Amino acid sequence: MAKKVRVRFAPSPTGPLHMGGVRTALYNYLFAKKHGGDFLLRIEDTDQKRFVEGAEEYIIEALKWCGISPNEGRGIGGDLGPYKQSERKELYANYSEYLIKNNNAYYAFDTAEELDALRNEYEANKKVFTYNAEVRGKLNNSLALSQEEVMNKIEAGIPYVIRFKMPEDELLDLTDLIRGDMKVNTSALDDKILFKSDGMPTYHLANIVDDHLMEISHVIRGEEWLPSMALHIMLYKAFGWDIPEFAHLPLLLKPTGKGKLSKRDGDKMGFPVFPLEWKTEESTSIGYREEGYFSEAFINMLAFLGWNPGTEKELYTLDELVNDFSLEKVSKSGARFDHDKAKWFNQQWMQLKSDEEIAELFQVELQEKGIVEEGQYVKNIVSLVKERAVFVKDIWEQSSFFFEAPTEYDAKVIKKRWKGEMNQHIADIKAVLEGLESFTRDSAHGAVTALIQEKELNMGQIMNSLRLCMVGAGKGPDLFQIIDMVGKEETLARLQKGVDTIVR
Image (cartoon, rainbow, N blue to C red):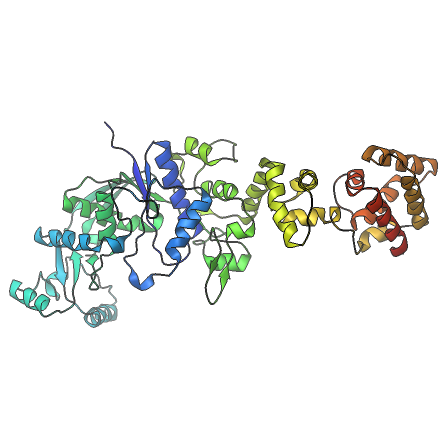
């Protein structure tokens, strides 16, 4: 029987969650759901120096907004917790001691000054210092010191770290589910620190121990961890544990395609790189949510940054992504972020959503402007203009004339359309509309068209000038739909204002 799929997203609370991190969480989630498995959220806070207040809560809220729901983990619970590494730190010391007893790790007492001196010495000889099998027997560690010296140092409280003892000249055959087979010689690897002098494990030890204890079957993580894969597999072997399968995701690249996407790129080019807004005393970084993106559009866009279903289909719900997702269709090469494509996804989702849902969101915008309108009226307006909008906030620009009479008129339209006796023509149209007993879209259209034909006027000029009076510009949906919706009294008032105000 195949082992149950269990994957985890394990961010560090060192700041806001980058969209690349959200994509890692998303791919883990999709993989788990596709295979009927479990998706865990674990907070890896072993680096206490870089811990940022509020970052953990931000991670949990961001995943919730995205609809990426863990089965177990931080904020949810589960049988294999706690799901925060600082609450598990007693565990790791025992595992590091186990490695020492089995000759797979050792105590290292080298001070920062001693190591800096060695690096400088190597640099002077145009070499690079690496703490590995070649040098470890000559340094200040338990491999070079007697057992008595080691015990004396420990009892005296001299700070130490625990390093992994990387085997010499062992050829490793590694398999990555995205990148295929690789070979690595252990002689090219250094003796990484597993346990720090502050009593906390490093990522390398803690994540291996936690993945084993939490029964993780697949490790799906960012490309930046690919160089650590060999060490992690050696650690599994040293403990005698089953090794999970690995998959390293491609980088998210700048819009230029050169280099990793960063917050600086977003600041410079005017797009978010975080799912939610992040505030510090110094600055505020806007998030996709606050920018006005639908969470469905954000997730849909992220899914395509590194994965392609191999079909023409681009619009996916989360459930559809689960159904079609596979690691085989994840690219090895970096995925270039395209801000215009991100907006395209949001515009498409605007059309997919019901008029009721968009109207409800737009009502919030209206309330902020002090406008109170009946729900059906707002819904009707949304149905007319939403196809022109990328975000809900854009609807105001496309529809403000439904709520407020124009206060100024487009000079270009005036120059092009408001010619000759236009003031008189608009006054005549006003008189015709005023005489209508039944004021509807069709009756208004019929009356205006009849007048234009009777007086042999230029249809384009009249209609565009009429729109100018109603809207203030040459934009908007069907003109007589606007006239019908704002009503007779408001229409007549706007036409009179146009006649009184617009002059060539």
